[in-house]
Structure formats: C-alpha cells, structure tokens
Length: 400
Ligand code: ADP
Image 1 (cartoon, protein in one colour):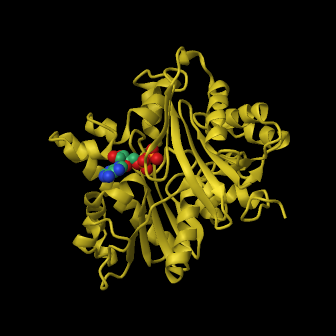
Image 2 (spheres, protein in one colour):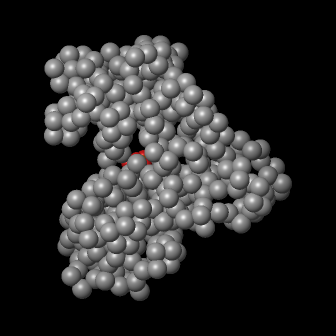
C-alpha cells in the first residue's frame, strides 16, 4: 500500500491543503484545495492535477462549525480520496519559529508550548496555525505532525541584517528582523540549484510577489537579507498590507487620529497596499483592467518600491548575478516585471520582451549582466518535502 503526506496552511478563515502520494520518486501531488469561509459560510473545493474539481461542498449551518469540526470533515474526505493509502505525516505551515526553531520540527506538547510563546509576534497567523495542529492532535493522536516555518530560511542572516536600531534589550527580547516567505524561498533556492547550479551559488534576489510580497537576497543558497522584518507587514507594497512606513505614522494615527490599536492594525494589514492606494482592488489583475488613474498609480508605486528595495539588496549582496520572479504576480504578470526591470536598467538588467510576455523561464537577454528568471513556487510541496525529511522517511514514506 502506498503512503501519503498532507500539507496544511491554516489561516483565520481559510485552510489551504494538498495531498501527496509517495511513489518512490519524490512526493507526487494528487489533490490540492482550499476550505474558505471558516466561521461564516464554509466552502471546500479541491482539484486534481488537471484542475478538475474533486469536491465542491458547503455545509448547512456552517457558521457554527469551528476549525476542528471542519478539519474532521476534510480529513474524512482526504481519507476517502486517498483510497486506502495511509497518511504517514502531516506538515503545517507555521509562520513564526522565533529565534529558536531554525529548521522544521516534529510537534509534541513541549514544542507546541514553545510555539505558543511566538503568538504575540504574529497574532493574526500563529494562533490559527497552532489551533490546526491541536485539532489534528485530537482527531488523529498518532499521526506525526511537523511544523514548517516561514522564518527558518532566514536564520543564517548575518546579525547586522537582523537588527533594528532600537535599544539592545528589545533585540534580546526578540524584537528583531526575522523575515518570512521562507518556504517559498527554500523551494526556489533548491529548484534553482537543480536547473542553474552556477547561478544558485551566486548572488540572487528572489522576488516573491503575490498578495503578500517580499524580496530575499541570497548568496550561495543562504538568505543574507530580506525585506520583511519583525512582521509580515514590512517592506514592499502588498495586496492590502502597507509595507514599510515611517513608524511615526503609527504614532500619529494613535495620538492624532484617535484610532485604537485594533483600528490601526486593521488599517495596516487589510486596508492599505494596492487596495488602499487604488481604492479599487487588492488584486493586480483587476488593477490592470481598471481605467481609474488611482489604479495606475498603485501599480507604479508597487513597481517603484520593488525596484527601490532591489537596489538596497544589491548593496547587501555587493552585486547581483540573478533575479528570480515568483508567486502570483511574479509568475504571471509581464507588465509588472517589465516595469521593475526597466527601473533596474542601471544594474545591467535587460529583458527580452517576447520571452517576458510568454512568462518564459529565462527572460533576460544574453547581454544582460543579470540573469532574470521566472519560476513557479510551491510552498505545499516544500512543506511535504520538509515533513518527509524531518520524520526521517524514505521515498516510499517508510521509516528506515
Ligand atoms: P497569495 O498566495 O499570497 O494569496 P498569490 O501568489 O496567489 O497570492 O498572488 C495573488 C496575486 O497574483 C494577485 O494580485 C493576482 O492578481 C496576481 N495574479 C495571479 N494570477 C495572475 C495573472 N495570470 N496575471 C496577473 N496577475 C496575476
């Protein structure tokens, strides 16, 4: 009987998941989907590799169902879909591993308690990640679970890249730059190592441009600097998150605009970014279609800030050999890539318009001083790979 791994990414109102069968040739995805509307109107959709819908389900009285009840139904569906294949591990995306967890870890009660301590560092994400782990502990107490961290890829950043210019005591309490999107960056780094090993050993900036967006400066496969810091708010303009703002703005909102902490939090996380600037949408595709000049301004600001931060990271790396675009916008949006690369012509970046338009794997010209690549990220697969290696499983999913 073949075996299977499940990867889960549990947020406040949605749970993304993927099922992988272990064929002896690496994990092979057989289904992926999303359970949205947790707490309001839950809706489960899963598709196979061809994009065909495997399940499309809603629940009567679904608003009353919590994560645990819904995970139970999701598990029942996954078990049936896997047709008797045994689930031998479940990997979770966990946003914060703090300074302690620098690699994925098998979860036990001690680990969970340690991870609870990082909830104040990521209050909008971490509690939901951990709630899903606890729910699975109840549903399937013997199933090994692995926490895979968004912060871990950055743990080797040099000390100077982790510091804010705040009093040392705060740094020692954990108020420092961690960096996020580590599962995506780890996946891109490993894949780049396979398709272009020379470039992977060089100085590369990875641009994860999705609803959340950040850059990672990588040298010889290791993160050296990144645009997200203490939280996933910092750095680039995002769908609804502000990116870097003068911290004085926050003080102003609290002291002069009379906003509460909860209101400021909502503003910075959910009402800013592309949505806040455009007043139209947080979705890049919608902005491209809009005639509203504010939408064009939001697009320009997005590209301007990416190029500006790339400039900063070129300094951290002392040069640049490669630029990799990934995630929803990075993989699919030639217009944004062109805007960013035009702004970076000073760094010797030249792209080939036809290749860019076609979302080709390599979009730079032979004369470009920097290789510019487009690569599909796969955080679910990275979670599956980390789960397999953390549990010490072989390619068939057996413990040696
Ligand atoms: P996340 O996983 O962070 O929620 P994604 O990586 O799916 O986000 O990225 C979502 C963004 O990618 C949206 O702004 C969306 O408009 C953009 N996007 C997705 N597909 C395309 C496409 N084909 N062309 C342009 N933009 C796209």
